Image (cartoon, rainbow, N blue to C red; front, side, top):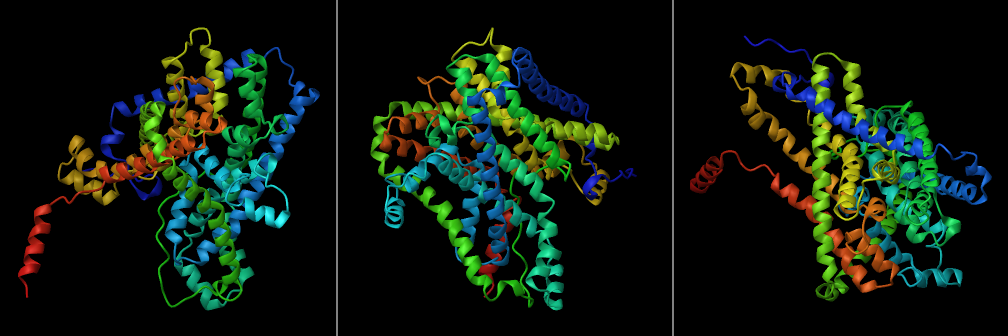
Length: 567
């Protein structure tokens, strides 16, 4: 008789092959050592290099003080606008579960996480630039040339374009977790709009807001490509751009270390404050079914809210869809330039190889950390399991350029050019994609339910057979989604490749930046379309390759033949 295993978190039991595996603790410890070693090594190199710099220079030196103030101001303003405006947008989407184009709008919102920054910038320039689609409307209303895309207003607009859809989608996901029975009861009681907000909606959003605000602030605070493209001059420089200039052009390693430590201190303090208000941050959007239909109706979906919800959703579509459409249309117009761009295909191949390497590394680290954490949980080492699983999330508080700067300082005596620099880019991208990969895989890894485990034990299904027939079908799609997230994040990376890459052998984001800086609009349009196509193609191909085939196809043919014979 198989011995009953004790349940763990989530009402499931750990897989016996997982809890008894000799490799699980070793893989988990090795992955944790790699993550901790990379982070602590980078931090140690920064501290060693910055030992002779006075932190007071940040507020005593006028230029550094101005850079710090502008960085904090633009990140705070961007966060307030993105998160604040996301609340009514998420409420409108929750009140309107079915309207024409809702699915398309949600898919476009989910693109904000994986859309390469330079593609979004290309679309924003095509729509809001001085010769963009919105320029005649702005000139008709204001009477002057549209120049709002550059400087603080342009930086904030780009940050809102990227972060408002992500924040609204995650809020919508939290709102949709409310049971339908609660809404039926609220309808029967006749609760007012204020009562619905106080009793049903705000309790769902309140735990999410601190972590979501910390995530958006970190993304805006460490923004690089947006500020480099839309900053408009030294007055709109941020710590990230100043760090890049100090390291790449001025070769002031001490100043670069000081700026990197400043970024790390601010981001770490903010995340500690946010995490003290809740659990681990939600980074990716899950699949939530539409609310079940019934006789009950939401009272707050009637009356004036129809107009306000339509206004918010129209504003969201006007913010999000025109830049994406501009990328596609401009790219189609630039297709004749493709045969004349010899460097484009080499850059695409280089980007794909680096993205595949980074995604494979992120996936291996994520699986090792999660399997090792489950192994520790099965033996009731809850604290050690939490530390191992949380180790993969610590990379969130270390910006990519900060991590790259520390590694550059650590490996500077032996670091060469060419493939060594690109190898370092792959390594940094793998670590930066690790939290997203863990977020996707975590939900599918706990294993089988207790009845399934007992039934498998009774039939003697263990080892590789259990892994193949019971575990792999549950992991196939999450692994593909994690691989897609990691690949697309690496495909769109610009900050790390700008630091360690070579202009003579660019990746697609670097080539796009060079073309935009050189005003080669047609070539940039073709490059942007190719990069966007690769992002979409990665998700489509991985989804098709992991689609579940029919296990017994002959049964399907037999049923079809039987139905064909029945009159």
